[in-house]
Length: 240
Ligand code: ADP
Ligand code: MG
Image 1 (cartoon, protein in one colour):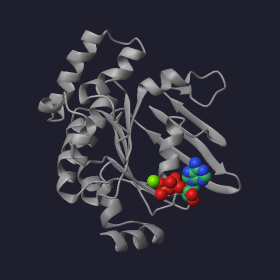
Image 2 (cartoon, helix red, strand yellow):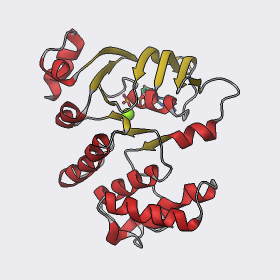
Image 3 (cartoon, protein in one colour):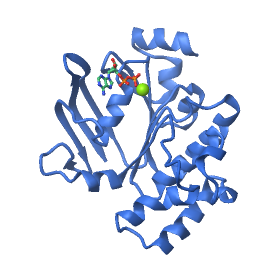
């Protein structure tokens, strides 16, 4: 579904991504782990063109998203993104947050979007919060609304950038449960995370990044119990 060929990204003379090659298949759940500053967020942000790659190519369903005639709006519809800090619209209710994009882009009528929003709120366990404003929600609830909002666009691929890093520990489980059930439903997902237990349980594959390259990419059982690369071993010895 996604092919990434020799992806480079620099900010000025700071080379952040130094040639990333990766394939992600339909329905695959891929976790990306690695030290802070290794380029994980930049990698995700290139996949939905929040950052423009400096060099290299990204194909989604065999279409280049980096080609000059590529349609960014269409791409963004296919690719949902969930951030560490939720990014909800503060002056809209939970339900309005979820309905906004599909209605604005003419993908659904307001009525369709509302039906969809109700269903999604049920899915993330927040049916009773439809009329609440984000400021009245806990971090874990905000993040579940953010996931519902991304799903409202019916994306083919979901990107998560440390979705539980800003949460109090007792909120983490509810968010991970929602992500786990999405994975079980067959959603294609790329998840940057520090939750090693989750990465190990839920991922089909784990990518370890360091210094702007993929150091190692394999099944979680192998990566966590018998990593081949010294850099992976060193990183895991610090975080496990
Ligand atoms: P990670 O998510 O693994 O912590 P990032 O992709 O956020 O790493 O950042 C990697 C490097 O890229 C850092 O040195 C950071 O300062 C730099 N960087 C990221 N985004 C920008 C930006 N928009 N402008 C300039 N430098 C950036
Ligand atoms: Mg990051």
